Length: 52
Image (cartoon, rainbow, N blue to C red; front, top):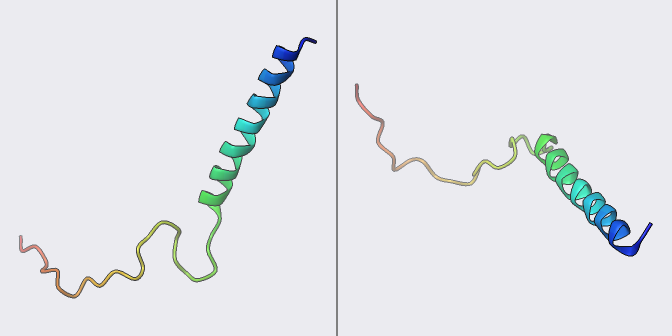
């Protein structure tokens, strides 16, 4: 194999690891009860409910 092919395979492997970590982190359940990307510290007390 030439150096370009090795570099392409290496870059592809690094990209797969990166995407795999993103997917794995998004599927993990956090221990604090929050589901992930939620904003648990946001205060919603000033928001008025919409009347139908």
